[in-house]
Structures are given as C-alpha cells and as structure tokens.
Image (cartoon, rainbow, N blue to C red; front, side, top):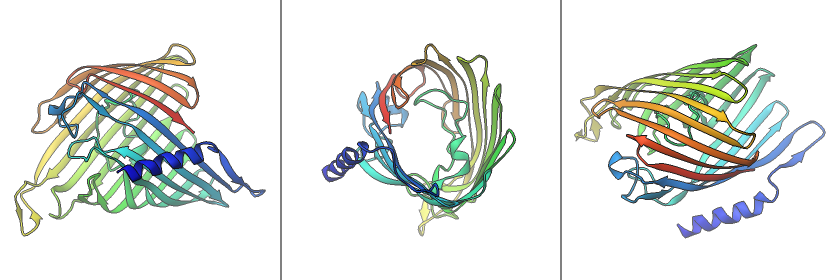
Amino acid sequence: MLKKTVICISLFTAINAQAATIYKNENGDTLKIYGEVGVGGHIGADYESGEFFEDESYIDDSFATIGAKGTNDDFYYRLELDFQRENWAYGSGDIVLDIDKVFMGYMLNDNHAIEYGLTDTALDDYDKFGDFTFDTTVETGEAGDQENTIKYEGSASDFKMGVSYSYDGKSSSGSALGDIINGYVGYFSKYADIVVGAETRLGSDGESKYGDQTLYTLGLRAYITDSFTIGLNGFIENEDIGNDAVTSGTFTDYETTENKGALISARYKVTSKVELTASANYEEYEGSEEDKWGTLGISYKPSRSVVVALEGNVGDAAQDAYLYSRVYF
C-alpha cells in the first residue's frame, strides 16, 4: 500500500507543474494533462447504514485523478487513472489505483461522435442531473464506467442524446451483470434543462446474484434567476436479485425488487465565490425502511480550479456532515 501511495505523490508532483496542453501542432492535434486532488471525508459516519467499511466516526474520502486526453484529426482518446480510498462497505480501506477510462473516439462531424473502450456509459453523465449537493445524493445504481463499451452521442439544436452498449458488464466489486444498454435524451435551454434516461441489464445467468434490471431516470434544472437554480431528480428501478444459496456455483431463485428515490435540490450563488446548496431527499429499497433526509451546504471557490465545501445532514443520512477541498488542473 505504501508503494502505491508514493507512486501517487510522485506522479502528481511531476505533472501538476505542467497541468496544461503539452503538445499542439499546426493541424490542431493536441495532447493535454488534467486531473484533480481532493482531501476530505465523512464526519459522524453511521456504520449501521451499511455505507462504510469500518465503524469509525470519521471516514477519510481522499481522492485523486490524473489523465491524458488528446485529438488527432477526427479521432480523440483518453487515459484516466483514479487513486481512491476503498471506504465503502466490504472495501479494504486502502487507497488503490484504478484505471477509470481507456478509450478512443471518432468525430463523425461537429455534432455526432462514437467511442469505444473502457468509458462511462451514456447515462452516467446525467443520472444525477438535478442534484446540486456534494455527497449525499440519491443513488440510482446505473452502470457507470464499463469495459467493452461502444457509445454514441449527438446533438441537434437544443437537444442532446446518447446511447451505449456494454458487453459482459461488471459491478464495482467485479460481479457479473450481463450485457448493459442505456441512454438518455435531453432538452437544454437558457430557462430549463430536462433529461430522461433508461437502462436495461440482461443479467448474469446465475453467475452472480444480479439478474435482469430496468432503470428509468428523470433530471430537471430550472434557472429561476442568474443566481438561483432549482433541480429535481428521481429514479425507479426493478432488479432481479438471486438468493445467497449457491448450487454448483450458480445463483438461483431470483426475485424482482423495486427501488425508487427522488429529491428536490437548490443552488444559490451568494457571490461569485460563495454558493449555498440544499436538498430534500427520499429513497426506498425493497426490503429496507424508507430513508428521508435533508442537506445544507456551503462552498467557497477562490478560483475556478479550487473549491472548499462543507455539507451538513439531518434525518436518515449515513453521516452528519461531509467536508472536502479539491484542486483541479
């Protein structure tokens, strides 16, 4: 573990000094280095919530990303590495290196592109679209980043859409999910944005506890004034889950569970450097009690690339507060 930490520090020390375009030719081809360093954690963490790997009142949530992205003619590409602490339930608690993205893409024209590799699925960018809070969001359980993914994204006038297909998908813990298809359609304007999304998972055919799944999401942002924005977010998920009894290495007796959640969120820009956020949240997973909680946060942004934020929670949240500071480059 020490070796990984030293690698992380040396990488950021070496590259943070550049943190910009490191190559550009007369044809417009580029290569850029980017990333972030974040330090913070969960204050008053509730181990009984099932969110954390150990029973401690403070759970470190430090995080770092470093990546390279570039263009060559109509092709684009990205490599992104994450250094994250495995602080979730059944995690190791260590900071580990994760290859988050390795993909190539091709611009069909100015408004349409297709990419392939280890990348985020189409819905991943918009599943929490109406939420302005920092950490205690309503979880939708969409596929996230997946290997063997092909994705199309395009735009026309005020509309955007995307769809992706992932072969033999995996959960964050490595459990089989089966093939995954998801997508979104969104309308974006100066007054309001709305995005609807859906996902279907074909299931693991008994290889893991995860069977078929369907997920529907809705996100909305309404721009009341230049300083005040309201957001709505919600999801409904039907998921087949196998029991813990395994016969000959195969999960059986799958049962359909219904999960749902929603929130209303708000963001108010007090000044160009200070923002207030708030949300009221509701979440219910079948077989568990419904959770309701509220959040109130404040963030300070001394520059475009630095943010320091504190968020407090009341109700059924898994923590009392979340504190972090991040630098982007």
